[in-house]
Length: 298
Image (cartoon, rainbow, N blue to C red; front, side):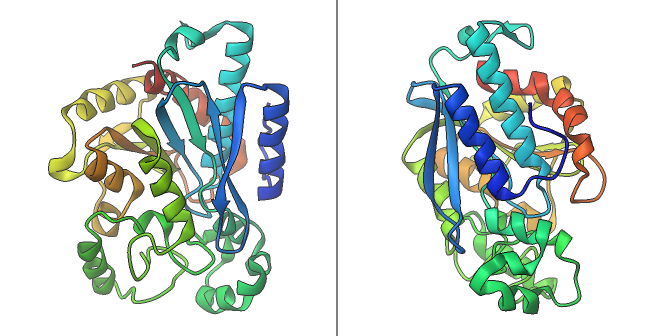
């Protein structure tokens, strides 16, 4: 079982690769690379073309989301191998007719910058230092070019840019700068293409913190989203909410709902200040355990 500690991105990849060896039905695929050349992986359980997508690590300082998703993958693999229950429901039966698809870390460069500083940015190190200024590297959320991946999707992008200007955000920054155009970053395009090229039934994007569930994006929100969000709320104790300001447009969940008219959710895991300490991992996962079941069983 994954430990409650900090992992480098290379260690995360190695952990996923070991899971794929231990559980041969876990299919690990390199989707592409980040700006700085780090591989971005998906992990799939099941062979059905209809998929439920889980994604984390959009923001560098939200590393615990990556560990939560890897813990979920390992837990599900174990229950499928033993043909036992996942939250009181037989895992094989719950997965019938669909597959689980997860991208544990969308933004590996941001992950490493937040964890170990600008030196991990390679040829972009000086640029990152300049963007960082006097800010502490542990709060870095953007990718290596100073673009916030979860503000770089084509959903209300012009409104987002207006909100950025109102807040004085006019160029690359440690957080909240959406870039010059939607999908300008390879990390964003990887996730958008993944959805375009697969039959994604619903999406769960993991962020931290706040213990909230964002479930809507204006007129594009399907009716089913509200019912699912209420079930997720009951299962986890997290509260249904609506984001505000620059968080209300340009996100992966927003783009998915607008583009496919299917349920999409952002889960803000845990409480405290990012980066959340690793010793919260097991308690956070325990709160989400039943929610994970509902997400692929319904």
